[in-house]
Length: 224
Image (tube, rainbow, N blue to C red; front, side, top):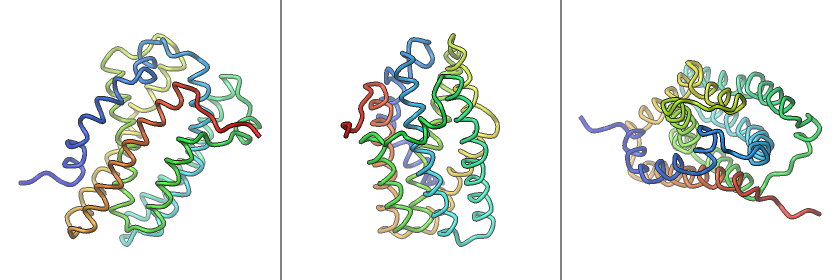
């Protein structure tokens, strides 16, 4: 039996996955060597990303044709807005980043580019292509969390908590849902839609690496 679309996409992104897992931001989370300034910049940019990600999920709900998929995606949107965002604000407060600072944060170029890509896909494409675009983030964070946990976690409490969040049963269940959504959609895709799904997936994977790299380097929009 041939592999599903999600497995096919992920297997062809093996080099991208290795590059992400070897990035100094990611390895620094596990080793405890990540500078706090880079982590704080990541937290601020991830907050901006999550706001836009919620809009992408809202569009995905609208694109769903199956009531069960609508329900699961609406649940994911609710969790993003009312659980993950609240957790993110508390994490930032512990790091000394105020709510006002989060609300005033501007997207860095890599954050802007990544979220514009996701929004463009969500506004123009059917659910299967949208899910393929979401997969590098949803499944990728689960892979990073599991990999760092298997390496022994992190000696820095804040980084250890980050790893725990992305190895939790709830997060793994969400990542598995998106994986299975891509697989189910892939079964009904014609050649054109499948090519668009592949393109959206690989673009998102490149943006994932750019996000880690941008946070590591502290890249920002010019002031003023």
